[in-house]
Structures are given as structure tokens and as C-alpha cells.
Image 1 (tube, rainbow, N blue to C red):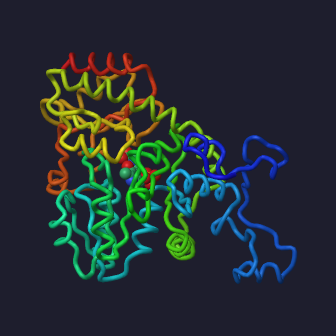
Image 2 (image 1 turned 60 degrees about the vertical axis):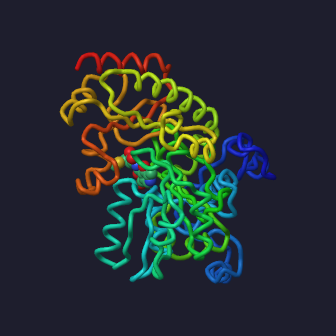
Amino acid sequence: MDTKRFETDVIHKGYNAEQHNGSLAPPIFQTSTFVFDSAETGAARFAGEQEGYIYSRLSNPTVAMLEERIAAMEKGEKGLAFGSGMAAVSAILLGLTRTGDHILCSEGVYGCTFGLLQLMEEKYHITHNFHSMNDEESIRSAITDHTTVIYIESPINPTMKLVDLSMVARIAKEFNIPVVVDNTFSSPYLQRPLDLGCDIVLHSATKYLCGHGDVIGGLAVGKQELMSHLAMTTQKDIGGVMSPFDAWLLLRGIKTLPVRMDRHCENAKKLADLLKKHPSINRVLYPGDPDFPQYELANKQMLNAGGLISFEIKGDKAIAQKFMNHLELIKIAVSLGDAETLIQHPATMTHAVVPEENRIQMGISDQLLRLSVGLEAWEDIWDDIKQSLDSL
Ligand SMILES: CSC/C=C(/NCc1c(COP(=O)(O)O)cnc(C)c1O)C(=O)O
């Protein structure tokens, strides 16, 4: 089907019922391998001389439907599916670098991405720097002769800081360096880095794309040649691929992404405004808050501000933990983008692997909490937050 508007592509792109006995829901090709009709066919497929499936670590029909859909959603040429967000991050970073290279990173990243960067530096001498990326000249001076990737989270997990993606993409092109953007916090509905000039966009599909807390998965989109290279190297040979059933669950979850994101954003805006007014709250970090330092940039590059709010509670770690423990509706859990509202403490949970000095540099204090605003009635979410804050 030709590419249509986003809200239509999320439902239809990549699947044609006429090719599957009229089944409205796509079939799950839950198979590890595919039978060749002859030895010559097997040889021709392995040689790349004949189209067709070989083995589900290389490609699978259900997974291919999802890869086509995410490519259309991110306005890219080719999508790749992985067994987790970290499988996508690692396949891409390892696929684009070799010993001695340098990665220029946004000033904060998810905890396990930090851990991967540390591992790459310690074991393979692929160095990295964290950079605020908020000034053109300082970005240019941070690029070295060995910089082969610029890696960005925007919004950053968990501080919600933004990077001006079109500005960085423009500078990167001067140096012919690919820009990789982890778009997990926004989803392609709210932000499309490829449209802003970036080269690869990736997601922890575990989050908003799935939306129901029942898949661990990763997705990436970019130009045909670059993504085919990654498919034939680090995706295939490291092998962190997605299962057909997880692809099926993601095809199902993605259909409602726009309506879910609208509600996440609507709820988050209301809660951010209420949190700002509460006397027990020190600081609210939400790109949709007019007092957010990068509010203008959020309006420029995001359709809406998303469903994640980070905020600092007045007090210390013990107060933050007491607040979480007194909640009744909101669940204490990592991950995000689910129907259920979740809360977590980055310093001791998602970013516990990050050494304290690095955490402080990233802006992660012991009082910082991250709220993944769900799809419940916002009044019930607020009532739960307020009763716990008032109990402190
Ligand atoms: C154990 S903590 C739970 C996971 C969280 N984040 C994951 C994540 C990944 C990695 O994605 P998976 O491999 O699908 O988990 C990549 N990129 C970003 C911006 C992410 O937030 C979390 O709760 O912040």
C-alpha cells in the first residue's frame, strides 16, 4: 500500500490481507527456518541471487511487515527489528565504529547505553565524550579526526533535556559523520529525526511503540544502503533479532500509537502543571512546560511534549523512596510508555550503573523521580500523587 498519513500507515503499512487468505490480522510466522524447494534454490538464496526466506535470524515475514511499517512511520527507506532496544543500540554503534574511533554523545543517555559505551571504550578502545550539543562552535571543536558517530537521545533519559537535531545534523554533514538518534521518549508520532536531517533513528520498541508492557524489542530506520550493511553485519552476526510473536504484538500495539500518545501528552501536561504548584516539589522537567528551559526547541522539533515528566522532590533519597512507597495506583517500576502510570528513581534504578560523578554531570540527583504518565484518568493519577505528597 502507498504511504499515506501517519495515522493510516500505523494501521495498514506493511500488511495486505489479500496475500494472507483475507486474514485481517497478520499471521505469525513462528518458524526458525524455511524449506528450499531444491538444493539449488538454497544455494541461490544464500548467494543473494534469489529473493526468499532462509532462516528467521536473517529475516522473517512477520518481522518484515513491522520493519516496513516503522520505516514508513519514521519516513525512512529501510527498517530493522531487534530483540531489544539495547540490541539495536549495540548493533548500530558497533557496526559504525572500529578500534580507535570516537563517538560524540549527547550529555546524557540511558543507563545501559552508558554501560555499553564504557564497555566499548575499555575493551575495544572506541572512545566517547558526552556533550551538551547546545552551541555550534563547541560541537565543531568536540569533533575529532577519529569521530565516526554522533549519538543523541532527545529528550534525554531521564532529565528530559533536548538537542537541536537539525542543527547537529547540519554540522555533522560538514564532517560527513552519521547522526544516530534514540527516539524512544518521543516515538515517531511526536518527533521524526530523519526528517530533521539525521541518519539513523532507533527505538526501544519496548516503550511507546508497544504501549502495553508486554514486549522487549528494538527498531531502527535509515537509508537503504546503510541499514542493509548493518543487517548483513552486526544484526546478523551478533544476532540480537526480534521474534515473530513480538513483531506481531508490536504491529498490534503500533495501530493505536497516535491515540495513545495524544492521551499520554494530555495527561502529562495537566500533571506537570499540578506538580509545579505543589509545595513538596522542587523542580519539574517537562518539555511541554512554558518554564522548561528548552520549551521553544520542544515546540520547534516535537509535535507534542510526550508522556514523561521528571521532577525533584524536596528532601533526599529517603523522602523520594517514602513518596514512591506511599503511592497506591501508580506502580513503582522501570520502563515507560505503558497504559499504566509508572514511577522510578533513576539514581538507584535506571541509572544506578552510572557512577555518581557522571550522574551528577547528567543532572540526575538523589531527589529526581521519573514519571511515565499512563492512560488512566488524570484526576486519579493526581489524587494518588497528592495523597502521597501530603503524607510526607
Ligand atoms: C532496566 S531499565 C528499563 C529500561 C529503560 N529504558 C530502556 C531504553 C533503551 C533500552 O531498551 P530495551 O533494551 O528495550 O530495554 C534504549 N534507549 C532508551 C532511551 C531507553 O530508555 C528505562 O526504564 O529507562
